[in-house]
Image 1 (tube, helix red, strand yellow):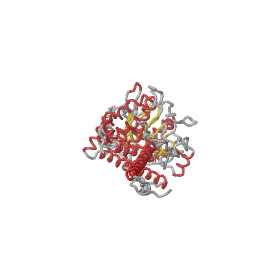
Image 2 (cartoon, rainbow, N blue to C red; image 1 turned 60 degrees about the horizontal axis):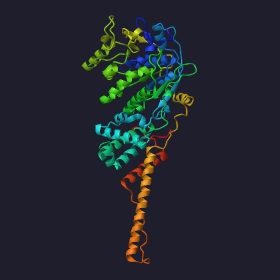
Image 3 (spheres, rainbow, N blue to C red; image 1 turned 30 degrees about the vertical axis):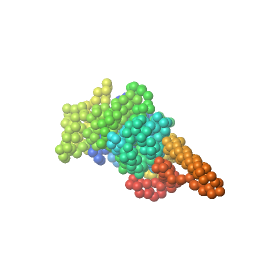
Image 4 (cartoon, rainbow, N blue to C red; image 1 turned 180 degrees about the vertical axis):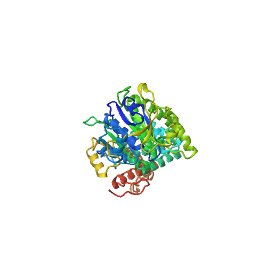
Length: 502
């Protein structure tokens, strides 16, 4: 049942396969909690990896980590293989790279503020149109003046500078107000308290590190630890959107291939679209449409197809639907919507079967010859070959220590960027003002001396004023804050409480 050019999914009235050449036509895995979505995701990830296709998957519950450990076929897995006549079933293990935006359960993933862009950053900050306009002005000003925006302190320093130069900036780029800048600064503070400062910065993720194969030709499975990240769902969603966009921008056009170059699984996919502005949904639709020509397949994992905007849903050709509940009118409507996304099978009512599926059963429809969707089949999903369920923390640490990217991302790089440039600018301005004050004092002294025509009773030279301008005070305060933070190395949890040292 294991074929070189196909992934075996399970058994309906026939073996159900996903052809690798259609793996970049995207897909959808749906079903209520506890119906088997994670196992299906693991089966697909194992199949792509075995075919030499790198995989990226968000691991919401930690269960996917078991894919890195040799399976032990027993219990339900052996029974399932027997039930479907899967004679080729055997234990296996797959190469894994663990990632974590917070750097605790995997290698750190970072992106720069500039790479994120104003649109996605506005979404994560939940800015209104006026505040988003201020952010767009900040990015444009940074581009025009050659200021690198790498991390949060760069953006905050730039906003302070814009506030100080508000009159000039408003003339050149459009109106900016103290209130709008203050709102953006407060939103950045909230984001920082959620742990986003660990994400923004360098070394930024190199997409090539997600597209590795091992010496046996298996594709590496990159697993993003998302259990802690899910407490900041907007950060999670924005990161996934950024990653899709980066793939689209970085990879060349390749057309139709025998198999994808990379496959992504985005769990809790509804978070990508919850409260998303139309402009952002349009961008996602565009990326999903065009990224398949770059050899990338995107598979959304969520509870119901209605979680995905219709324009995006239309691009998802390979479908696996696990059971849905239908106790309320709203749930019954959702079941009908899900049923209508499949090519009908005259042997049964799709809408009825969706509510009757047992755990591990699913309705499957994939692209067949000439790109035509297969008739939906009631399928018993095959068991995974690797371990099902999480590995131990010490096993995770051992895999990370021997990872092909070990040491590449573990140390933060803090280049000369907007914060440092603007800090020097403030210091230079402060020194110039100090010199000017001294010159003014000396000139005033000389004038007084000439008027009194005496040198014996000269008043002592007055000390130059040390009073700071508002901009100077703000920049100095920001510098002290960053220095204190780096010095004390405090790690705060999602609600701002101090974390105990590990």
